[in-house]
Length: 475
Image 1: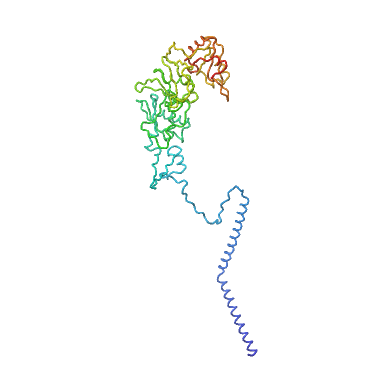
Image 2: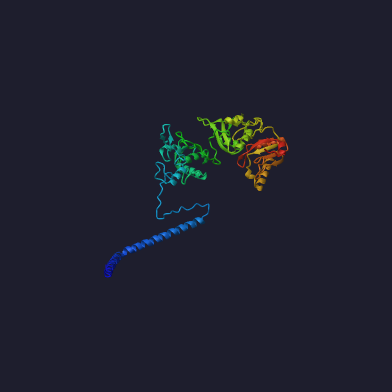
């Protein structure tokens, strides 16, 4: 091949290459002219990826910074790594699941009903039988149902004549509020039914628990009448609930004396003594928590014996020592513990110095020796309370009043009235000791002062050992 032919072949190949490259460039230019929007879309996607990448790096840096600044004892925040993903709500399987039949009330309302006694607080859980079957016990009926009505009612006897249902409802609602026995806002007594012919009434309360606590008002004084509060005859106790009140109302003497080691028996009482007269005898040693003078159901007369319990059980031995063997008219009192455990209890002998009480309206045998062996020192009891001896001026008035009255029966040699001291137990506090110059004067004073009223209290007297008096042994 000549040089000329070779030159023509190369020239032809160059033209074909230039034609092919130009065709491709034209195709690319046409493609660019046809799809400018695709280029812009790819550019936006690229910028978006870069922005998300920067945000993730920034969030990661912030989390590391917060963890480094967080106190060691503080729990770390549960920061989600995917902020755009919403956490699925967990279904509650155990918390705040309403019991069957109470799906329509909130958990707070359910707890409020439990506190008010409208729903039993004790849960009744299913039990398994030997065969493996679950048996659910029958739930206790809630308040408001007919089945619990008798558990929410109380019998009230010895009511004042002519009393209205409204006034009795107001009285018990007020007493429940004053005693702090209301378990929810509002009035605990819903209704009152009075039988004027037979002199009794029925109270209906809103809850079982408040009904039980109202039993503590047994013996309360309402318009000069001591009310007798009992359960109805058709009362059926509810399972899991207490039948007796858990509170004591100060000043209220219950007419039911429960069996316990603190229950006292008082026998040998004259049949004509009333409840108030026997109470005056017993309260000379301390306030009563419960008292019951047993009477004949047919005649209403006393059977000659009673039971009592003191608020302060520590005065039991003093009351036994002071009352046991005391002569009342033609009878002699028998005072001892009434419980089964009384046989092992320490009791003072019947020969100890007794207390003599002149009960108003009762004649005593003047031939009976009173107050034990006569001495020149006379002890006067149930005349003053410890709080009445705190004021100096009032104390001096009491001393002067007692000295002036005792001087009418003979010459007074000395008077001792122990006063209370903060933080110390002073022997003989509440007693008055009067020393006469002779035994005869002391005897006259005992006969004249026993049974008298002092500050609306019945005076109780006994003789005191002179040696113990001079040693200031006032126990």
